[in-house]
Image (cartoon, helix red, strand yellow):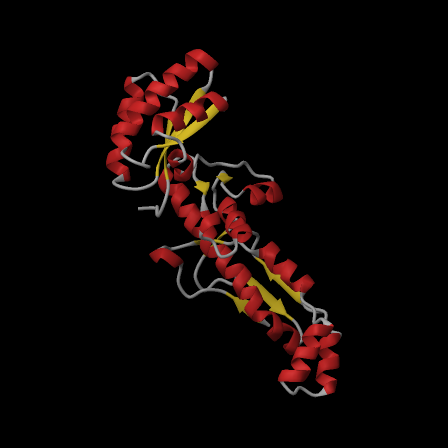
Length: 261
């Protein structure tokens, strides 16, 4: 029998949001040695034929007990326990640690962000940087995120998508105003990115375009996004400009390198 646990909680915190049970069980169910695996081990590792025959027939035959995903756990508390014949348990140890460890880390970070957001929605934007975007999206949703920018993940896990236009789209037009007008005329509910050039100038342009699009098309500026610079100061300025123009329902989104603090 072995337990998966941690001696301390991550991020100098006191708790963890347990995650990764389903990926762990999928790993266990799918763990077999193919003929290609056996050939590699025979050629490069020198294992005897009897042991390779045992690996060829390997199917997990033990028991797994675990804390349910999304449940709070604490240091020194087993998140997952495996009871199995020694070789069966040992072969799975690293893969199970990976599935539960990475998932729990991401879910815990997401929970801390969601808690800090105090009721505001938090989206998973990890696709560009996550080593395993499916695992990252899944864990972020368990931790309390309400949507993801990873469309394949949203489809797979049946969760809402979230996102805005990229800097490259803004740069592909002759001017920022042209880009904003193209987006505003195309989408019923749309968002724009403010930090491609200058945030203070961009928000004035966004408001002008939004008010025009409301009248001409009935389209609504759902959100503006800040992705660099002094996000705190810029968000206060942008909020004031939006409110002054009567766009009180337009949200201000922040992204890139955010943490709970």
